[in-house]
Length: 211
Length: 322
Image 1 (cartoon, chains in turn yellow, green):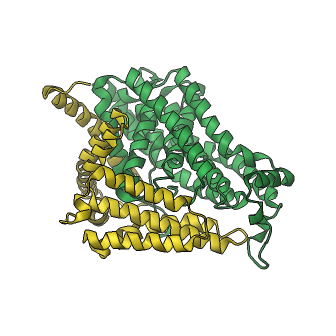
Image 2 (cartoon, one colour):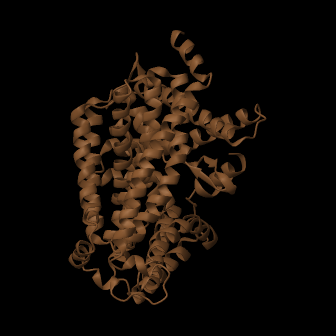
Image 3 (cartoon, one colour):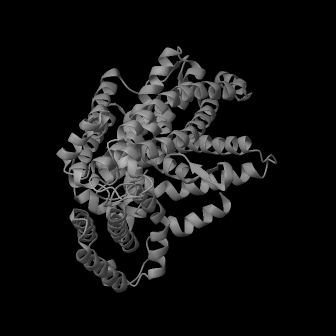
């Protein structure tokens, strides 16, 4: 992991940027609903609604400027996910009139992506969880998401430490060996995760948690 | 395989969302009923584990790298219902926090990667465990073959969704997705099997109950998921399964996308695919798929042998006596 790990931790794992802005202090539930409505509207538009796409892009840019997050951060995150969009959109090239379908789908998806990137940059994930809870998403799913988010960073760092320890004790660089090494790390990670889950349950019960 | 927003049309979004929600509902019910309270936090932590495991890149030839998807790993270690929840949560987090996979495509993505992949993989795993008479070797063969099949099944249904939406022609989407995922599936099978072997060495009681594999799901549960998964396949793949050109044209007319196929651009390299000759591509993909399944099963068997031969398993046996 090492180098890639730190890049992930820096750019990927921390989408939220705290600023004092109107967009940040907007109620999270309303923000979530507006963002989803925006995406749905973009998806429902016909393929050649270029004017509406331009309007949507304008709205998003205005919100991005008001939020003061910095376009660099937003664009970096956008570029991280854009390759997947290009890949899927590329499939549409192989049909008659494919180029226009490709272009329209690319524009539309990029706008939706930018909207979600903006949402995650201006809203804490715990606030999104709170909104999901009030939207009556089943409690088990919200609890699972909360636990997942809470322990994600911890487990990620643990994997990094374990891999560093393993790598510093092995000298073979054959591919089969590298794969086995990683598999060992992932397997150990699962075992540690499952015993950690039991300790967490004990701790939760000790603090009065009941289902 | 994460479908972004804007690639699926409204009927596809609604249909896939409905099937995915029904499946997650079933999973929630089963977990609520059968999972001991003690193991509920494990679902959350397993989701974090799968997320972390997805970020670990395995080097593949030529500087490229692949990563684990984890549906079958979760299903083998926790059972299919918990795996459905774990994968759903992973997708929700990826969607809302990392913009990976669209909001409107969340239902479709959940159907592909959180329902079809773990359920198909687990069903095959259980079947092979039964056929080989249990034991660690059966578990490893089942894991390897199940992981490969789950990746391919998810890619088939993903191609169906894209084609039904008119985002890509079936004759292009199916071969492209299936070929790619038949190769990606090999990596998935290899990683999943290696990880399961390690877990079997460290904590055999998670996988083996005496000599038999731990049973996570009753037959009724498997049957329910089987119905839901086949419903998904029926909606998204069956319209294309008819190999005759006029059948396909009828589908195109019914879906109102036939105008897409009417004006082939001269000199377009893949223009053939959009014409009625599509059927040959679908048939050849089907044949290649059959050969691929046989080869993959052989490889799964060989992999299980290779992993079994390692001294790892001897230590496993002494570990059981500890």
